[in-house]
Amino acid sequence: MEEDVDIRTPDKKIIYGTLRGRLKESLIIFVHGLISTKEEHQFYNGARFFEKNGLSSYRFNLYDWRESARSLEECTLSLHAKDLDTVISHFRGKGVKNFYLVGHSAGGLVVLLSKERVGKAVLWDCTFDPGDITDDAVYVKELGMYYFQYAYGTTIGKKMYEENKNINAIDLVKNVDFPIKFINAGAGVLVEGGKKMYEVADEPKERVVIEGADHSFDKNGVEEKLFEETLRWFRS
Image (cartoon, one colour):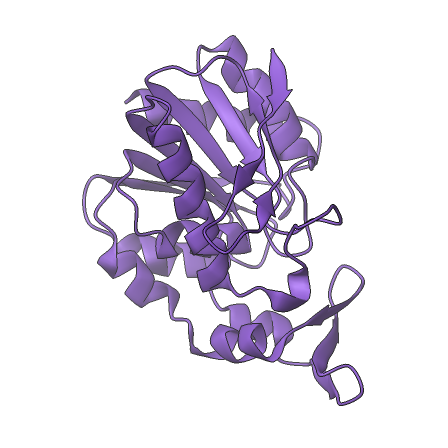
């Protein structure tokens, strides 16, 4: 069972999201990365995998083209985290008591920036230094934005550009108080960063490197391993 559940933020924006499964005591919340959406394969397929294994999930867009949604240009990672906290608070008000967070890429940093009380988290190939992503960005005076080439040409606002330069993943990990599992893509470039974050995280913690996986976990057989490792952590 799947239904659209849209949530209004305190500043009158709309978060567009999808609930998969019935609301129960526990809920997985997926957080996508930069220049992504809730319908990327790992979230779309993951929602179905976890539902088959007894866990409902909610996936949402951090920015969207629809009415009253945020645009990427107005966002920062800390604003994403506030919206994540709004989502958690909404479902806590609906009777959910235990939250499992899954953050992919820069979505992992959003999870680490969350201030809400949650049960456990899994970071899928979490971004280590967001400043690296936007280092080559060029300021376009006419737009008042920074332009850079990522998956494709993208613009971000000054606030995100400057915040990205100052975010320290190690400090974020040190400040969280919930169990974390780090899953790195063995063929990606974030393995060493994942190791560093794991080393400073408090127990209980876990780390797995999925050999042959790229950052999007879209090679044959890799997605299944990703889901199985995530489920094992939530059930442990």
